[in-house]
Length: 339
Image (cartoon, rainbow, N blue to C red; front, side, top):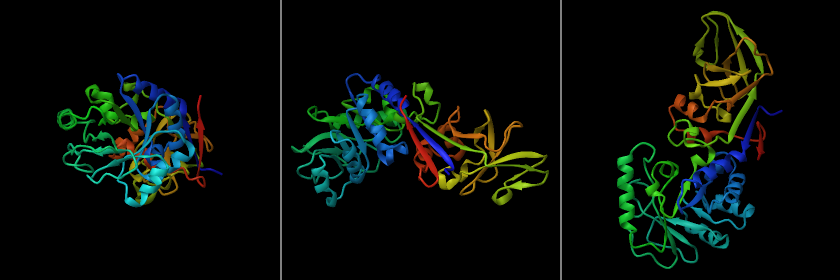
């Protein structure tokens, strides 16, 4: 009935939490589980992250936080995104902490003041003396994955602005900052993409001791042989120059296998093969190894095929690939394992 299978390996999440915590000399690890845990499942990931020693969970919205609160009643939860006044009552009742980008600090809820040190997005341009409701001061790196010089500038600005605030928790490091800049660990780090075993640098996550937690599989629904001059898919982007066996896989961009992933590789019957032609909404064509048959498993992510590779083909970042995978129950079976 299902067109594909997504498996989330919580043992990999546990491993990654332990690996990241091993880099920290006294700083806390806060697990970023916004956007449903980057497509991995916020509640499942949040639970095991806390079990492995993460001190808090971070989300983007109050609605995300409330969903977590119902499943994890004792968790410390920080809402990173901008929060409207309409959400304040719910935030207070749910014992949430809020990131705030203005000098107007709400009453009755713990607040983390955001300082814009160079991201040019949310945040105050300068800090005033924090009031009693402020428990933390935060900022966000713009390019810790690519630009050490600018990262150093941002960190220096943050340290200077918060030098007199040792009684508050200071946090600025994301995954890239955690992995490359130990001087930026401060009181806490906020790790998202690395938590899921995906490299913030777009390289092999194993280089940093991380294990991918998501596996995505489908199967060959139909085998066809194209003759010379015959094509597959919209726009005839692939035209066979010789007799070519292809497999039609019932996954497409409606499932998160993006149209610009044409040309990437997947695994069929143990062999890496290219995606040929344009990715359709509900199907993709792959070149087949000689031994492949209808019904054979197709590994879209896993068996050495990584989200980082797909991102390079697509000209995007791994975050977008991970968050774009759709696990609607009407199309995809989702399984969580913890071994």
